[in-house]
Length: 340
Image (cartoon, one colour):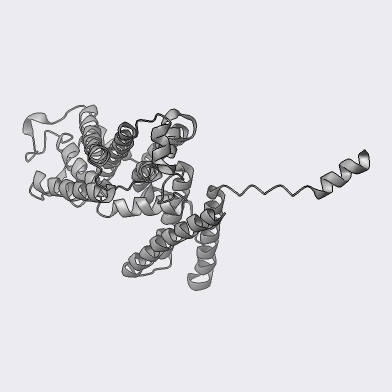
């Protein structure tokens, strides 16, 4: 009997190895990129890239605000959608919120009778504006069946128009001390970490997350299982809009001003962070942890280019190549998954 059991054990097919989580691959990529910049730093300019805490802090600060947007965009992409409006929503929301955060000593306030307001007022206004934009996006996409690309493209144009129209293109400045304190120091990083932790839990351990992944994996099956797809899509896009409003608060507070052009291009950076972090443009796959790692990769690359004194124009070109490369990798990954 022992010999028979041993023979059976030897003849049994080997267990399939469980693939590494995609986040591990992203983390490895981040380490490799840092190592490359470190080597180039010593080789070309005889300086260390990573042995500088101030540089690391600047890197994370630069991308943490876009990272907040990317968390919302990640959820949208997991459902199989896209959001091109987040950057413009940031611009419009920042303008509106800052107009309720001005001090009374500024003689050219947008609303002279509404100055020196408690900080909760501009914060609430910003979150409400972002929530409204996301709700409109979700409602149009869910109930008119317009492709998310078209619906959010329309919101992108409209929100940018609102930002330009609100004060005829004039910047809004002179916020109260309490509003300016929101993003002082490393607080943008703290806000990002809190938001990332919250939505990682929501996506991983709650009904909200299970429904989000189910819709992105197979919308028809999600309907059959009893999920109200339309209502959930509205909720996901509303969450994304809410996070754009939060990003507008942090951005305008950090800059101590709001301008109509704020947030320009943020939507593409946010999408890139999500895709680099392993979120599939086909839907059904992705995580906040992966997006956070993608955000760090994005920040390290930008900081590394600056560190090596690469011209800003070349930086934009290389950034475009990185975005396309991430999408190509996602397509290859999906084809390999399909063959498997």
